[in-house]
Image (cartoon, rainbow, N blue to C red; front, side, top):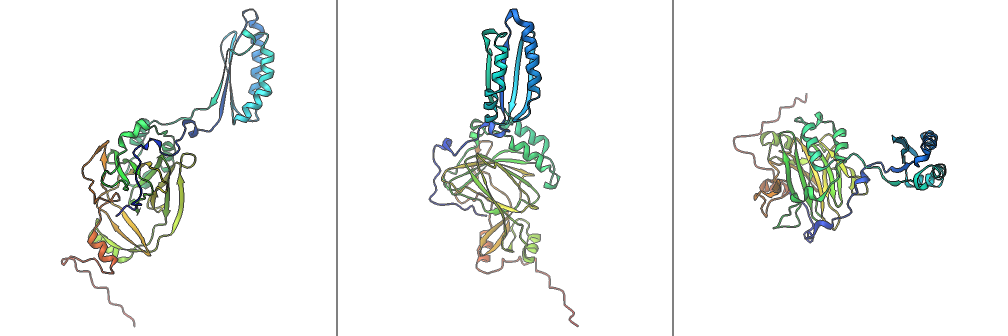
Length: 376
């Protein structure tokens, strides 16, 4: 399987300027929290308490543009109002109306006649650091096939990850002999899953591939990529028989690929996608002029997959293993100039098939004769 790339593409030395980065609170609902803190004049505590009680009653009954109201009462003579709005516009309308009325009522009974503290900002969402995400994946992604995974639940948790450069920078390793290749950098592996950081040079893309029994979650880290999914094609009998004889080196043909979707993963939009062989086959592409990074979770780890080529008709073969450019932030030394990121290919078999020749069958494995047909 051969990675496809633009030979003129060059990875920029300073990859810290990659694309538009997500902001932490962009992972949340976008609600705005507004906080007001008041302290009573010492001689007017009772009047202050009564006023706060009346204001709290009014605030608890606000509905339009408000998603939550909380009034904290730390002690007599002190009150904290916490109001959550759907948008900044709703907050501004509140400031011009109900808040002005509240301030007027509290002016005579509060110290300095105004809030001792006032602040507003975006509601911080529940998010993962990379360490907490990896812990979640280790504890919750189990099994030997994708049909045992709670795909949506895992996808929701992965979407909560807020990538911070210092958490994954050690895994950003490019192919020094060929900067146009994308690289596969292993972060974690056990019997249930592999976690990799993929580094995509400008204009690079993977081959179209399947995932056998594995789930494949892809999360955007930096930059932007496209994921193109295709319906799983029908394989010819020759390939199926060849795969039975040679599970990791079969070559054959299939029907032309039918595209199902072409989605863009970017900071301001969709940031996660999923595939398995029931969903279809896919490829990942960096169509931009900037490097991009994606986190891939394969469960279980890929040990074999089929690669699909587009050349009028589509050809397919299986791979024995998928090489990693690095493991745990260190280069493996196994990635050579002639290594292709998508796996190990049977060059001789591929070339014969492209020339219209059938792959040779070992002498000891003579194909059986087809059964005789009774046409009477």
